[in-house]
Structure formats: C-alpha cells, structure tokens
Length: 162
Image (cartoon, rainbow, N blue to C red; front, side, top):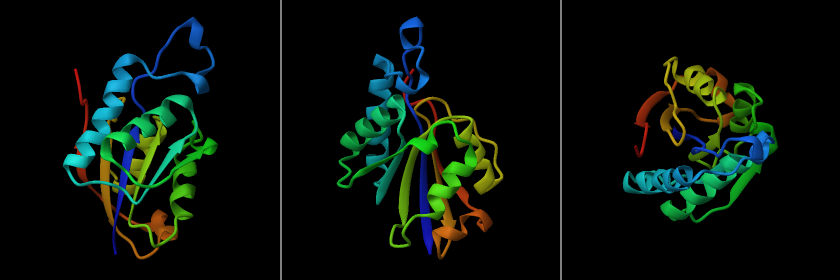
C-alpha cells in the first residue's frame, strides 16, 4: 500500500529576551503568513492528510493550526510533547504507532529531527527551512514497519515566501 508522509517544519518564530522559554516561542508575523501558505500549497496539490500530528511546542502547534485552516483539513490535530527536540526516533515511534487505516499523515515539528527523519526514510539529504515541507511516498503494508521501508521524495516546498 502506498502511504504518504507530509513532513513540515514549523514556521518562523519570534526571538529575543522576551522569548527565553524556547517551548513557548510564538510565531513571528512572517511565520503566521508562511504557516497559512503551507496549507494553501498543500491544498492546491491535493495533499490533504488523513491525520495531522504536531509537536506541542507553541510555534509548531500554531503552524499546524494555521496550515489546517488554509487546507480545510476536516480532522483533529494531535499534539505530542515528545516531538519537541527528542530526535528522529521520537518521530519514528509516532509513525510506527499509527493505525493502518491512515494512508497519509502530516508531521509538524523541528530541525534537525525532521531532516534526520527524511534521511532515515529516503537516504537523501534535504535542508528544510522554516515552513518548509517534504512529502515522502512509501510502499508499506503496516506503519509499524516504517524503519525497514525506503521512501522517495515526491514533493519539496522550500521557502514559500521571501
């Protein structure tokens, strides 16, 4: 069965002394715009996932919510604290636990974890900028077997705005 992973890095977040708690950093104005562009771009390409899972960090969660709004995604947003800077293995663990009825999933999170995940699944080095998206197709009967699968990149959305 052909399955799709939509891997999205959170949009640009605010920086500075007022935002010393990294987990709680909000999106910048540009980040808010770019998060909407993620959803708009995915909708235009017909890439509406069955499920959206995001890191619980504020900038990732807000990116996911804005993208969901723009793509008119009808489902729920699942937030996972363990996707916050926990390494590629946390993402693989999340994918392995997916119900096999799900054929496409969008993961919203952080670098370097997402770039490592793409490499793990495709053996391709890809730079994912803020608000960047990589789509991977994998021929896979069961999500639990993701570690042994080899996918291919079918779409790459780098900088969505300048």
